[in-house]
Amino acid sequence: MAEMMEAILAHAPGGPEVLELGSVERPVAAAGELLIEVHASGLNGADLAQRQGSYPPPKGASEILGLEASGVVAAVGEGVSGFATGDRVCALLTGGGYARYCAVPAVQAARLPSGVDFIQGTSLLETLCTVWLNVFEIGQLKTDESLLVHGGTSGIGTAAIQLATLAGAKVWSTTGSAEKVKLCLESGAEQAINYHEADFAEVIRESGEAMDVVLDIVGGDYFEQNLRCMGTHGRMIVIAIKGGRYGKIDLGRLLMRNLSVQGSTLRSKPVAEKAALVSAVQQRVWPMIADGSYRIIVDSVYPASKAAEAHRHMESGRHMGKIVLNWD
Ligand SMILES: NC(=O)c1ccc[n+]([C@@H]2O[C@H](COP(=O)([O-])OP(=O)(O)OC[C@H]3O[C@@H](n4cnc5c(N)ncnc54)[C@H](OP(=O)(O)O)[C@@H]3O)[C@@H](O)[C@H]2O)c1
Image 1 (tube, rainbow, N blue to C red):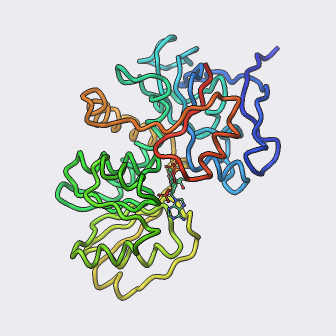
Image 2 (cartoon, rainbow, N blue to C red):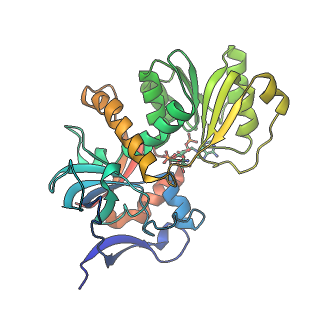
């Protein structure tokens, strides 16, 4: 008989109340995979959309929410090298993270950096890989260039500000409160604009700055605003559309300034691309975590059984940094 495990299940699309602790069949480690006994699961913006029914998991992925988890290797699938049972790891998942066990291609897992606990460990790969892909690989941000990050205290925002600053770039950010402005500045942003108090594009233009790269999670009206504050050969990467899926484009500005715009989604990328990102992040960011230059910012930790509360907190937008579910 199949072994069972605890998992957070959504019995129907809807609000946070649809999330309940339940029991499902435990996955097994197929060839090339690790089975991880999960100690902590990270929340990500996409989980809210999946719970609401507007972001279904890609074909073949677990129906269970959760794009990252940390824990201990419980079993090693055929053909896997470099991991053994008992290893403390974190993993970038395509789904299935809100559960006591998850199976993942071994190439999407990484040993936890030394000194990093499970709570911090599940706050790393989804945000770091997203930022690495979009800011450095697609956006090609260089030292001495400038980056505009919206939602500067989100999981993505805190990672983007820190990594870009550590790479020697100048970072501007937008965010929604005075307290959040403070965290953006502490994370390394040169300027942080409270968008409830000022029009960010106007502030940037008046300052004489022009952004080389914009990492956008808002879309909607921000699309045109982003274009207004981009410099020649500027690159905008759209990774979420929290403010709406339609935006206006000033095509004149686009062509006169040689701007480019690209969208991207990490979740649906093939395993090989995710593996390359996990590897890049381990190589480049793990040393920054070890020497303390990169700070893992955790907002709050909820028992896994209180996943609904954790989702309510994320939906409120009051959080700063990562929200984590604890299985211990
Ligand atoms: N495409 C990809 O591959 C990919 C990968 C990872 C994440 N994402 C997306 O990136 C976004 C951030 O992810 P996360 O996990 O870091 O989320 P998060 O921690 O929940 O952060 C979201 C933040 O965005 C800001 N925000 C929300 N609505 C806004 C609006 N209309 N205008 C301006 N700011 C708004 C809020 O902060 P303020 O108070 O500052 O407004 C909020 O705290 C999510 O939408 C997620 O789905 C995309």
